Length: 266
Image (cartoon, rainbow, N blue to C red):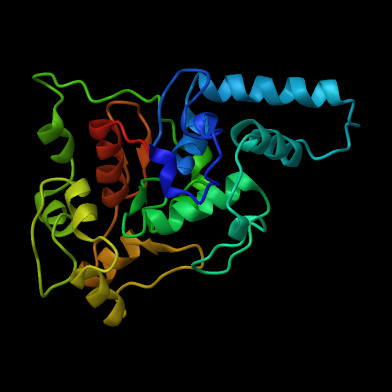
């Protein structure tokens, strides 16, 4: 049972809606994955918005009420109304860092930050690597990322080698090499670099200690700034031939191609 990772009361039997989409049946391992799905899935995001609007209209609340706040409360109720926590977690205070959450769903999403510690969440829009899913799903670029975008269709003309080849080889080799010069392992894809630079690994810790990388306020590292500190790359814009999006740099472009290649989800 995936829900056993959370501090639910023994008699709690209401975790189904937390980890299963009631609209499409998709199962999730973590609460934050379900939140991301409801925000970004082309079909389910529309259905949850209709559900929230109907609940708001039926409530008779005045138009001056902040609809975003009310929608968050409705979503919290939908996903967690049947959930009961053990006696130590009734105040929604994290036992690891003492953070207090405003609602059950954000408490569970916060716990995911600890449960998934070590994994990176890259954003191709701003080229930043988020170290916590809580901050990734809330940062400003998320509304412009489309999970329903076309997956990469391999053809004789457009394939991964062709798309990656749009970046000059010398620059591509620098981007796909570990920026910790004591390591310098080379990878074929951006996903390989990000898997290599997991939190608490010697390479990432060395970059932080050497002041090549630093954490921003929302638990992220600016990967483009990091690479440019090491290699000083002169960036140029590249247009994606799959969806026509214009990427502002080679790093953003290669991250974007992986978004198609891997059909990225949280």
